[in-house]
Each structure stands twice: as C-alpha cells, then as structure tokens.
Length: 280
Image (cartoon, rainbow, N blue to C red; front, top):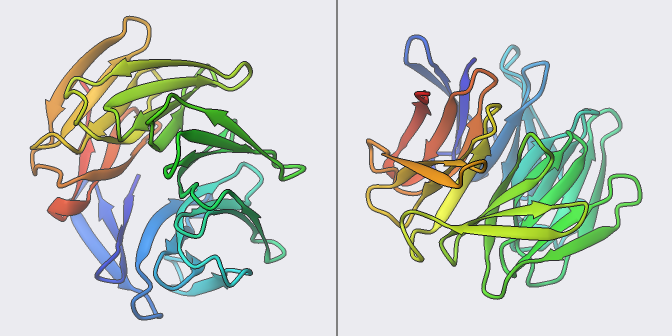
C-alpha cells in the first residue's frame, strides 16, 4: 500500500506510508542520476529509470542495495518510463534517443528497439501485462511492440495529436492523453479504430497523466489548467467530472490507479505527491 516516487533533481527515491503520512527517502549512489519513472515488482523491488545517467536501476528496500543496468547502445542515453510485464521483464521508453527497451532481470539481457528519430517515446502501458503500447510524443502515433518478434506497429492518430501518456481499460482498449490538442482518445488495437473527446479545460488544457480504475472510469489531469485538475471520464455516458488538485499540481506528470480504486498522483511542479479517493 505504499506510494513510491522519484525525486528527479534531488537524486533520491521516496516512499510515503499512506496510513501515517510518514515519508522516507533514499539517495542514489550515482550522483545526478535524475531518477524519472518507477514501478514496483511483486517482491517489493523498485525499478527506476536514471534519465540523466543512462541506466535502469533496481532498489531493494529491505537490504538497501541498488543494481544498475546500463544501456547497451551508446545512443540510448535517457531512459524515461518503465513498466513491469507479467513475466517479470521490465520494458521502458528512452525518450530523446527514440528507443523502446526490455530488460530480463533473470539473465541481465537488455534489448533495445529503435523507433523513428522523431518518435520521442514517452508513456508506456503493457496491455494484458504483456504487450507494450508506447506514446510517440514527437509525432501523432502510438506504437505497439510485439513481445515475441520485437517488431513495431504504429497506429496513426489525427493530425497534430501528441499522445503523452496512456492506460489500458478493462475492455482492452487503450486511452491516451493528447497533450497538444486538449483531448482524451481511445484506440481499439484490434481494428485501429479511434474515438476522441474534448477535455473540459478546452484545447489548451494539456491533459497529461492518465489511469484507468476497475469500475471502467478513465482519470486524467489537465496540466494546462491552473490549478491543475483531476478529471473522471465515464466512457459509457461520455460524461466528465472535474476536481481541483489542492496543491495546484504544478503539472501532474504521472498517476496510477490502486487495486482499491484510489489514485496516486505525482504533482511534480508543486513538490507534492497526492492520494485521491473517488466518491461514487
């Protein structure tokens, strides 16, 4: 039930205990690593991307040790967002370098798949816990990587779209936040069909973090609205509900839905983390 977070400019990992509000921090051994994204495996190990130092790290809170896995291609310099597959392998995006990577912790094998130079892969989600879908933030595309063949398929979004983060809904569809056009969109992977909805904050709302809860609702934050908002979208009715982020948010760059239906938010520009408990 803990909330883990990265402190990118402070070069630390942090943990919030929700029941007590206690926060503990761990500095990283490599200076200026720039920890960016993280995910936690079933054993409680924290996997994180060292955005400034070109490695994927894993931290064992019980023992305090960190293992670093360096990028295997010198062009891959800025690992960005990780995601943990059902088989224990760790997928991750490498934004400015335009790669998608996969690490097998059992063998240490790291594989890097190169995307087009302008792709800027950003957010990532593993459909069914296995198949990576990646936002090409530098273009109007979402990429799918076949986990067996490692071939890449791209889905074309409307002109001008810039998908930033995405999430998988209960029915297997992929929802994305269109940062450039103020929309939330849905991709049907089997057919490539798209549907979009304007966000409540309008064309300049800059929707960013996004997550799906088990009740079928889609949640996202509008970073272009001040203070930032937390928006609930009901695909069944196409209705939106809007709440204000108390700290202002400062750009809610990421959020995750917990098994009990809460949302953990990273309010990056406001130096806060947040827990949202939705009302029915």
